[in-house]
Image 1 (cartoon, helix red, strand yellow):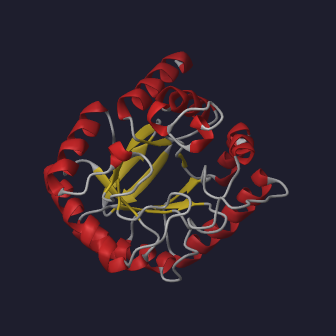
Image 2: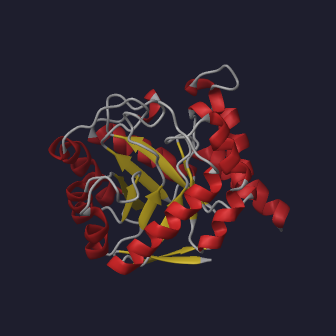
Length: 275
């Protein structure tokens, strides 16, 4: 069991939960996740919450392979109005800001977000770790090799599990030193990893429980699922559910997904199996 302090609101993580993805972007890899205006975002969030999402993750910057960054000002313009509206519409739901930029994280949390989800583990913006510590919110620390622009060009590891574990040992120590109380770990499926690397990490996922932190898994509709099957992101729901189920069996605490209902059902059925 983990207890998270979300801006003074205590959140008890005693069983796996679902995080729903909403992208305030025109070019995220899965088209159905794109909600660029407040009305569309509220409608999608309501659907996800009704289906069982406990967290809604809002991102304003595409981080798919080969993508170019946008400015912090443009990112803030995309996400802050939506976060403000969702916070008012769904005050009992946790809102997460998906960003690697400290000023965006600050603006989002001041508007109502209560969690920061950073794909870079604090390495893209030198101010991120200190900013999250000052904001006193949980921090999702993800592993990435390279940048979104370059990460899939030629990812190389000696032993991917050992290297990602070493990364987290260092980043968790940096977070602790800065004063971040609640760190959530995300191994970064698809971020600077080949298909083989991804499945090696999946196979050894339980090793990351030794870090003593909640484990978030984000595989939803990614290339690691649809490419080996000769399919597309649009047809990858069944494969996503299979991989999410394996992740749950290996200790995942949070599933970050486009399809909330199916992820929640996987959690419920596995809970029944475990009694």
